[in-house]
Image 1 (tube, rainbow, N blue to C red):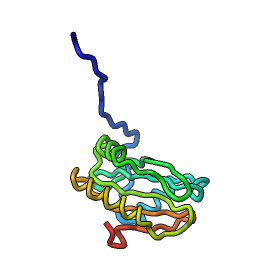
Image 2: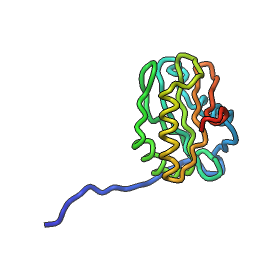
Image 3: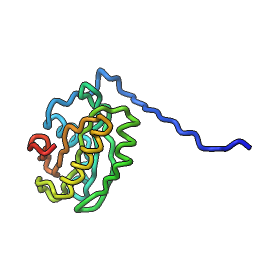
Amino acid sequence: MKVQVNEIRISYKGGLKSDLWQKIGNSQDAAELIFGDWDKDTIGIYETFKVVLLNNSNKVKGIFQLSQGGITGTLVDLRILFAVVLKSLSVAIILSHNHPSGKLRPSENDKRITSKIRDASNLFDIKLLDHLILTPDGDYFSFADNGMI
């Protein structure tokens, strides 16, 4: 008797030619890109966590929304995060989430998840370039600029 199992395929579909991908040179470039992608109607209501996927030239392959939560937090599942990062064959990532309160200071949970993701990234030889916290008015806090990556 032949064993039957589901077929699993791994693929990546990009519609934008790579010569048009935006290059990230610093935290301001990343913050502008991410803020431009954010739904301005909800950025002040609930937390959302996104990851920017980059190639070896720090060009943006895409932005993936990992989770959407409540007023004071959102769940980050590392298994889903790295499934997306690995499936897209990204070699670098930038994490981002918003603080609806407008506060730029990272919480202890923010620091803990960043550290956890950094450690996991190192295992896969993926560069964690930054973690940005965005506010509804467009301000941001960069973990990298503040020596926290």
